[in-house]
Length: 295
Ligand code: OGA
Ligand code: MN
Image (cartoon, rainbow, N blue to C red):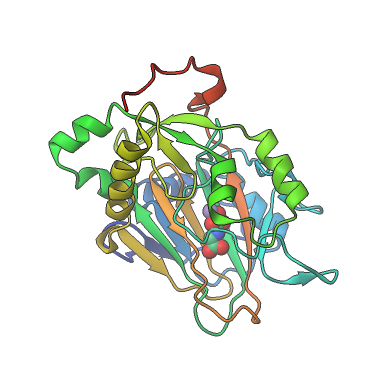
C-alpha cells in the first residue's frame, strides 16, 4: 500500500490495494489513520460491484440510509446514486446534487461521519469534485475571531436550502416531504472532531440559514465572510475523476462542491455510501426563542 499526498491541506492517493478483497484488521487501521490525517482518500482504478462497495464501506462503521428517504436506492438502499442518467425515461432527481459548497447532512441531528463515492461514468471533460479542509479554515482565523466563533451556533435548514437554491430536477412533492421530515436544527459553528480532537469550522453556504440569535444583517455579514474564507483555494483539493475511482471523505472536517463544469448531455454517474454519524445539535423548535434582538 502506497500513500501519496495530493494537496497541501487535504487529500491523499492510496495505491497497491484491491478493495474487492476482504481487508485484514491491520490494513483497516492503517487506512483509518491515513483518512484521519489526509481527510480525503482517493483509491484509483477499482472495479467494485455495489455489494463490494458496501462491504468496503462497512470497514469504517455502520452505514446510514440517506436522510432524504425518497432518494434511497431501491435494490441497495445503502447506495445513493448521484447521476444525470435517464432511468426509465425519467431524468434523475440527483442530477444537480452538490452544486454549492456543503457538508452532508449538516441540517440533521446526525451529520454523517463520512462518505465513499465511486465513479461509474464521467463526461469527457469536467465533472470534478472539490474538497476543502475545515481544519485549515479554522486554523487560519485570528485568535480573536476564533474566540468569537467558538461560542456561536448556527441554524441549519433544508427548507432554506431549497428556498434559496431551487429544487433542481427534484419532484416538488418529495422535496416537501423531505423538508417536513427534517425541521431546522441548531448546530455549533465550530465542532471538535471526536477522533482527532481538532477544531473545524462547521458552517456552509448551502444549508446554514443564519447565526442563531443574531440580527439578519449581523448574521449575513459574518456568514459571508466565513463562506469566502472557508473555501479559499489553499484549503482545497480538486479531484479530476476517472471511472473506477473511489473517494472517501471525512464529513466532520471537510466541505465539498460538485460544480456544473461538464456537458449536461454526457453521462455522469456516481454511487455513494454514507457512514452514520453521532448525535449532534438540537431542533430549533425545541429551544425557547431568544430575547428579541435590538433593531
Ligand atoms: C455527495 C455530493 C458530489 C459529486 O455525494 O454528497 O455532494 O461530485 N456529490 O457528485
Ligand atoms: Mn454532498
